[in-house]
Image (cartoon, rainbow, N blue to C red; front, side):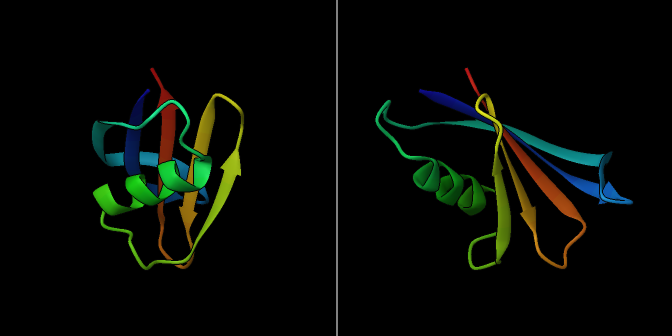
Length: 76
């Protein structure tokens, strides 16, 4: 599967898009959400940062704690 991500800043808890980093990566079809989140964090420089994760079915939202940023993962 191909996973697309958007990494951007937040303002007032909402995505702000004053800057944005977009990309995509491949994962096996059998990959678990945990593995997908781990790869996205690695690509966005958030490895080792504690994050809250929400699964909306067609999108995963990663919110780093104490950092005004957010990562959205969608699937192609």
